[in-house]
Length: 407
Image 1 (cartoon, helix red, strand yellow):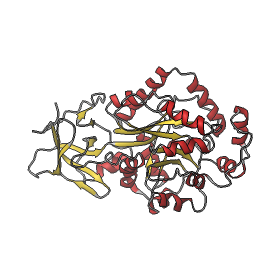
Image 2 (cartoon, rainbow, N blue to C red; image 1 turned 180 degrees about the horizontal axis):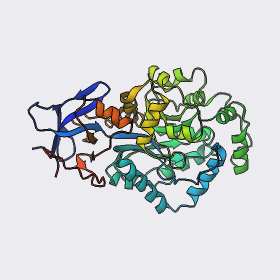
Image 3 (cartoon, rainbow, N blue to C red; image 1 turned 30 degrees about the horizontal axis):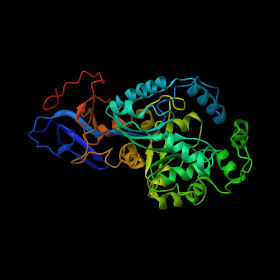
Image 4 (cartoon, rainbow, N blue to C red; image 1 turned 90 degrees about the horizontal axis):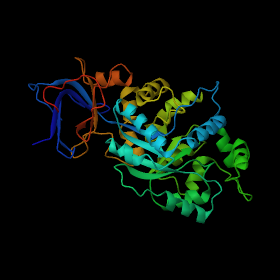
């Protein structure tokens, strides 16, 4: 006997794919046993079910910052973020991550790519029922081979978590070649902020500019430093960091040939529309990246660089930035593409044998895909969230699912 079962007006499986009406059932381990079209004679809950959202790039530990004057300048912002994070005890960082996660859960997010700066996120996020990956952040432009290997040994997770793990070598302007090499040699999935700023590309090409000055002030620019002489994507390619299990974040300032390099490597890109708006940046050419075969995922980034913070806001903003994609393609960026970006292909989809991670929105009497379109546009609420077949009780909607459903 299944541990849980739902028969509903529709189940969205991906762009142009839905079961209407639909039925699913799962076992006590939260694995899907049944996923099929329901009988037209079945009594149906007035719901549309959607695979759980995947937040591909997040810094859940970071708090919101006081609103600076416009425009939001990147380097002063970095200083404010570093100061805010250093003032927070580890327990507060963990609590901040959980608080942010609960808000995202209420929006239908069931998996995350968390950049963990303190080693405090994996266990509490796993206890919430989330899946995905925690990337332990790496910084150190001054580190040589021995120090880089020592840092990875020190930071390697030692406490079991339901979330998988990887490394996040922060960016080409904050991570030394030796530290990149150590992360690559570990063969763990990587998340790297890449080609985010013109100043980043300037530093890599010439060794000059604001990032050189910042590293000098911090005492982290080696005396024998030599610039790479190429842009961020080409530099990562040379370092062996450009590969299928690598997620590149932002990619605002790609150079000629970079799209072909990324596509050939099978790496993915994560974009954060809220951060694009926060820093008053132009929208990157996501439709062209998708057309080139690059998986492009959505992320929230942090509360320090996105207001309002949440995946609903990111979905709506993505639809405004790239209207040619349409709601279903944008939703695919927040589900299957997000899972691909985390190297967790079983997430962000509903499939037999996979986890019963999904959320529900009111179906109404319209066509099967209409509830999904309305959800992406921010016009329809989430009224239920299931993690591994267990209904999350933190969502207070008053929804009674009958028939049939969980108690």
